[in-house]
Length: 80
Image 1 (cartoon, rainbow, N blue to C red):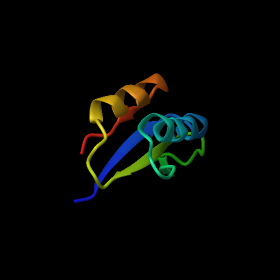
Image 2 (image 1 turned 90 degrees about the vertical axis):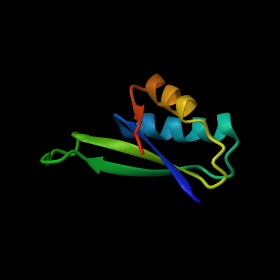
Image 3 (image 1 turned 30 degrees about the vertical axis):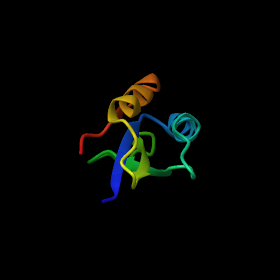
C-alpha cells in the first residue's frame, strides 16, 4: 500500500523549506512534490496554499511528527 501524506502550507517559501526539512529529518530518498492549491472561489494568485506531497510506501513516517513540522511553518498535515 502506498501512503501519501499531504502537508498544507501558507506560501511557496514555507512549502519549499518544509519539503527540504522532510528529506533532512526523515531521510527520504527524494524531495516531496510541491503543488499549488488555489482556494475555492479565489482568483487572486496570492490566495493560494501550497501542498507538500510526501510518498510513504513503507509507511514509516509518523503523522504526528509531520504535523508538528508543518505547524512550525504555520501549516498542518491534511487528515487522510
